Structures are given as structure tokens and as C-alpha cells.
Length: 369
Image (tube, rainbow, N blue to C red; front, side, top):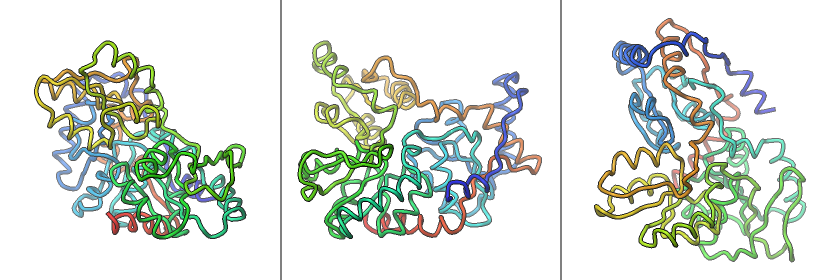
């Protein structure tokens, strides 16, 4: 029901076709005019994975939680036009005041990973897991999840995590309960737990489609339950990609995001959050070589900004994140021209009862990192 509540609260419209025929120069000029007109009343956060045509107009860039916190810290802005995906705009809405309005320029900008854990599946899973393990499980969710999932976690004593603080949050979780249910990305959960010393044989997978635990062995040995979800971008970096580079470019450093598979992370030289990847590349010595396993818009931007280094994508056939790419210059302009006319298009409104529990999960994270 929570998801339906959210959708009912959101006004969804499609961009008029006329925006597709406007020139880039005209659209860029109009965005600049509207930004100048609104001044501090308008705030545009842009995720690292967004297109350059959108990033160039962003007031702040960062990962999902950084942007939500930046939006929350901005008390002047009346309108927050969030250039990212749906769950990020939800988080921004939950962390900002009631008088501030969060807009997502294109409602089709979702996240396939977040969509892999819906609240009905999670409720069914929790009921069954409680029957098997009793009150020994603490739920954690990656911030790349819906508001309803964050609320579920908050209501059950758990917290959100980011790729930057996942290790700290898992350590905290193990002080609360014997076991962890990690949603919705199995790879981040597995990689983080493994780095903390949890053997792979003590990790199980929860399959939300079959509503079953996937595990060979004594269930009493399980201490980490991984939701069977993944990032469709990061799963496309493979062991074969690494093997090829090791043979053809043996002096190239390989750095990947922990949403990649355990096998890929294990064979890489470095792994870490988007922020970690950016900082590592920027601090690297001139002339060094880097293959990066993360979203292509960011990789291309790092190539452009670090011309004193050789930088390539770990997977040369990689495409940008399709849902992140939904937001482009025409959609940004459409949202802004709507505000100029006094019309709020694609406003993100999370119902109060969901916000209350979801903020609990976010606050627990912020208190422990």
C-alpha cells in the first residue's frame, strides 16, 4: 500500500514534444535565465552519474546521500529540482522542510536496483525469516532503495547505509542483533561483510521472487542474509574484463565500485564508493593508468578532468545508466519553465507515515558514522 500511496501523491506528466525540437543554445540560455530569476529560491542538485548537459547547471554534485543532505541543509530554496533518480528525490523530500518542494524532471528516472525490493515482497520475507530465525535479525538497507523500504527498516530497528559507510554500519548492526538482512544490493552486502571477516559460507541469499532462502547447509550458521538484488550497471563488469587488462595492460590500476560482484572486487586493486573513486583518481600521480568499474558518465567526466592520466572504463562496451540518463537538458528546462509559470510538475511527495519511519533509519545511520 505504501508504494500506491506515494504514487497517488505524485503528479506525473510527460514532457511536451516541442522541447525536443528546441536548440541546445536556446535551452541553455533559458535555463540560465530562470536560474538567475529564481536566485536562491531554486536549488539544483546533480548526481555524479548525470549527463554533462545537466551537471553543468547543478548547484552541487555528489552521491545520493550527499545530495539529499545538501538539499536538507539549504533552508533558502523553495524549489529543489533533483537531477538524479526517484529514490534520491524521495530522500531529499523526507529530509527537507514541508515548505520546500522537490521536483524530479522525469518521473521515468528510476533505479532498477531499488525496484528489486518492494514493500510487499519485504513484508513476506520478514514474516518468513522471523519464523526461521526468531528475533535475531536487524534489517539494513542501502540508500539506493525506496522510501517504503527505508521505512520498513526504520520501523524494525535498522538503518540505512551508503557505500562509503557500509562497513561502519554493519559493525554497528552486529552490536544490535546476531544476524543482518541486507537490502536490496547483494553485492555491496557481500563485499562489505566479507571485508569484515564474515565467511562466504555464512551468507545466504533471499530470493524475493520465490520467497525462499537460497542456502546449502545448516541455517543456524547464517549470519548475513543478502537480498537478491543488484545494480544492472555494475554487474556488467566481469572477471573476463580484468583478465584481459592484466594481459594487455599489466601496469594499469583497476578500481571498482563495491556494487560489482565479489569476484570482480577481489581481483581489483582498489574498491570503494563513488566519492572514493573520484578522490583516488584525482590524487593519483600524473602518468598513471586506471581502469574504472563504475557508471560511464562519471568515467567520461574523470577522463576529461584528468588528462594527465590514462583512464579507461573497465568494460570498453559499457553504456551509461539508462535511468540516470532519463534526465536531460530538455527535461530540466521543462521542469524549470513550469516553475516559472507557477506550475509544479512531477513533485515528489512521500506520505508522512512513511517519512516518519524512514527518517528513523536515516538518522540511525547519521548517528553512527
